[in-house]
Amino acid sequence: MKACDRLDVDFRVCVRLNTDFHSMKTLLTTDPDQAAEFIRGGGIVAFPTETVYGLGANVFDERAVRKIFEAKERPADNPLIAHVGDRSQIAELSREINDAAHRLIDAFFPGPLTVVVKRSARVPLIATAGLETIGIRMPRHELARRFLAACGTPVVAPSANISGRPSPTTWQAVYEDLDGRVDCILQGEATEIGLESTVVDCTNEVPLVLRPGAVGIEEIRRIVPNAAVFAGNAEQAAVSPGMRHKHYSPRAKVVIVRNASEAVGHGRSAFIGLEATSAHFDRVEVCASPNAYAHRLFAFFRECDSDKIDVIYCQEVEEMGIGRALMDRLRRAAEA
Ligand code: AMP
Ligand code: MG
Image (tube, rainbow, N blue to C red):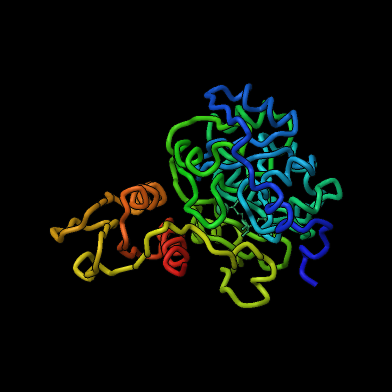
């Protein structure tokens, strides 16, 4: 039995019944207290973090959490990450923080790292997609922290995009996908990192990196030396169901190339990478570093879509630090 079969809700039905989202008024604000009021009232709010924008609801309010799945058209078997404003809230989400999780929390909270631990009985199954575990993260982003403090509860938040689309790194990208579907968008700057958090499952003897992110494997192994990396086999895929789903896809086709000279295509084309190129593209973005590349990637995908680009050539990077996360997202985008 799949974990989500334990849920009493069929989300495909929920999504079909709620297709008329555009009747909802979405408030735009820069005030974290005003945004938090919607969370306290059972609503859903998009907010910035250092990774990407998230779409949040009070973790303990089942009806509010359900609204996230509906607004995003997110498959019911894709679990949500709970965001905490301070460490004391971790105990509300899990009563069993083992040694590896403790060490990772001490080393990387607040920051772009999610630890997966056993859930407490208070956490509704809808939030964890029927799993007995929950992902927890404490953002370091100033506005996110003020927002979470004002919410006064842990907030579950997946990326604030329609499922399958590139994650939003600006409030305008959130607006493009979710205007009329969410109560409020808390407007901040473009997100610093631009890729989602590193996810580490700490519920087994060997901590397992399920999703690469801004915190590199090298840094994680300095804290938990026996950490392994998700290899995508069936047993590991069962632990992180969300990894199977289509992700990060612009409408344009994504092709990974070693360098710009390999990019020969038809139609309107674009290039993003680290090397300057004299070849002709309809849109080109040369990034000064892998960090700058990560910061720009998802926004570039969306700009290419607005520009009716047919093919986006993405230059590969070395799989070190953020480069590993970047290659993971590029491969998933290219798969679609
Ligand atoms: P998103 O918030 O859209 O970036 O997606 C969250 C991702 O984190 C999911 O797709 C999973 O891959 C992972 N995740 C969240 N919660 C868990 C959990 N309890 N167990 C394993 N993986 C999780
Ligand atoms: Mg997502």
